[in-house]
Image (cartoon, rainbow over all chains, first blue to last red; front, side):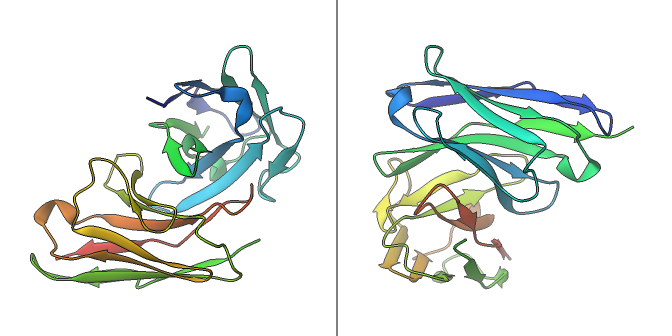
Length: 116
Length: 106
């Protein structure tokens, strides 16, 4: 069974940094791309970033480009999202997600609150 | 990026009603489409993948159809547990996009 477990969320001041982690299990991790999706309070779902199975190719939404960095450690079956220069509008639940054999899997999410 | 237009944004219905939610893609996405149900404070729950495949454990009153640019989620007989927000999700490439959501309420 495929599981995704996010961690690393919390309260951070504007301009601060935070690193999210997503531990994966139940599939051949290095064979599949991984993504981050976020949901601001009371809002819809917004794709944030993705990277290929090897980690060689990365993709970002315009709203986070230049501030967020996605990466993965295939030896640990874990992906990361390094978030710098955080702003109030980055406040959201951040979900780790992937598609394996056409089926979509999501974690339970981790809350990031950017506030002074 | 592929734009997803979901309608309606809000739907008022009663228990037993047949409910239909539509998503339109700005370009062809084949069947790279999923439907989710989300309740307050919870992660999205997968209902349908590959446009029309029912996720394991999801009641058979949920069904999906479509390919290319037009997709539909149907609930054949609305149950009390189905009052929630529903999202479509295209994953044709790495640049995922989502519909705006449909809130199904009484």
